[in-house]
Image (cartoon, rainbow over all chains, first blue to last red; front, side):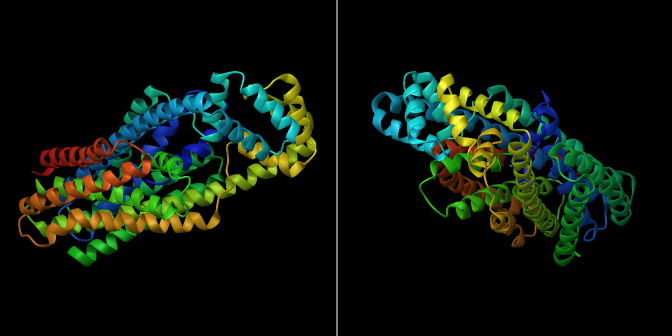
Length: 240
Length: 240
């Protein structure tokens, strides 16, 4: 879960490059993916170890609060850090094209040469870039440092959407436990509802990332099932 | 948490570009970051709502199992998907340079033009690339699609390191509850141990990502504290 968001986003990015304003949908996918999986697995784990469904609910809502806050805030601060990082690197590049021009020329030559261009074309290209400092710095930001201009609003909106989607996803596996007395009953309904949700969700996610639809949906479902089984086993060991 | 890993990795990447084999350290940072935060917050949340420390331990280990499995497996499958995606895009590019050469030439021209080069240099560059299909496809993979050759081993090793670091991180906030009877005592020791760990950990993380050390350490600590407070409040509401 926590690892793939940005990888997913890269995959989605490429396939969705023609569709505008899909950032919102991406963030929903990222948040809901985690929200469906971890609270489901935690609740399943506790179901084998405690005998009160309301206890599972308490632990589940605590996890949703913990996970969505950490995810939202963590993402927001990482986004802010990215902006600071971009700004400081940009300042450094401006300094370098100003004061360390020879070094910067050599770096630019290296980038163009690595593209597979001839020595004379490399020379011409570097010559042209070095005439315009803004152009040159933009080039270095993108092609030396692989940094895109970050959008300040995006950090906040994205964190909020992801956090709320985590909550929305987490309510699904948890909701059956509200209506039963014994956790085993809750687990049964929760597993049915959540695995179906994960499959449907995995189907749409695979569509967004351009993966095979059925296989992709099965993978997402399998992660949830395996995480739940692992949590069940370990909780049984400690508390059962 | 779940959102920033890849952002963090990008930040770390840039600052650490001279240091080899730091992938391992990055993955430890990513896994431990989540492992310290979420199990800590969950345990803190439950401490206000249940009266048995062993129940907190059971829920905590279930969360660690759920989180590390989902994180490890999710990351592994995302890594595999990235490889499939790369391969299929590469095939598509080979097809395009072969059968849709005019379209491909236009795309390549556009990329060079967007770098700020003159029409004649753009023409020369495209001409040179189009003579060598492998070079040309490599160029398009990197500069049109922004895809780097993925390392197949990396997906597996990375998932394993991150999963294990999540477990190692999660044991820290949970361990005090093993030694007490009442969750409130566990919470006190857990908060002390975890907030200190988060601060130390945030300090090293800031070093890796090139952020201000003290400020960065405080931020990481604050996310943990806020997530714990949110979980405590919501668990109290539902179960207290």
